[in-house]
Amino acid sequence: MVTPARKLNIVKKRTKPFVRVQSDRFKRVGASWRRPVGIDSRTRRRFKGTCPHPKIGYGSNKKTRFLLPDGFRKITVHNKKDVEGLVMLNRTYAVEIGHSVGAKKRVVLVERARQLGLKVINADARVRSVEN
Image 1: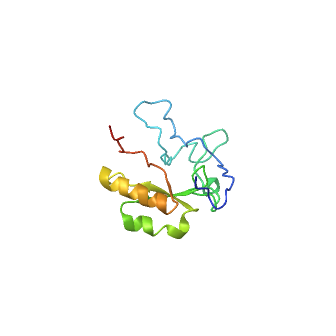
Image 2 (image 1 turned 180 degrees about the vertical axis):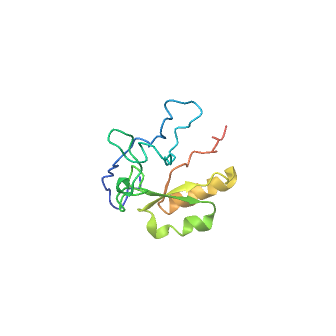
Image 3 (image 1 turned 90 degrees about the vertical axis):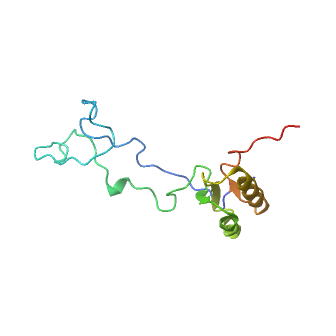
């Protein structure tokens, strides 16, 4: 089992999504965030009691940004050359095999990653067990 070089505690400042103004009132208004632009909008003017806006202060710590819960960073590979380039970074990055990679090439990539001591996130994808 490959372990990360250092395990950092990941702190998320906000996990709830920012919802669009009045998306709870009208079915035609989706929940994905849009900046309010109305001239009389209470939310745009940031009155007390209105929903919060996304701001730079909600950003994650630079050291833990894009970290997976197990402490690795994810990198997508599509060929053997991509895997070979991660030889010295096997305790920093976890490999994810791209969705466009076929089953035969996928088996080769998983085997090479195991030889180099890399963690493969989706090693079981598109792999059928051999029937005896």
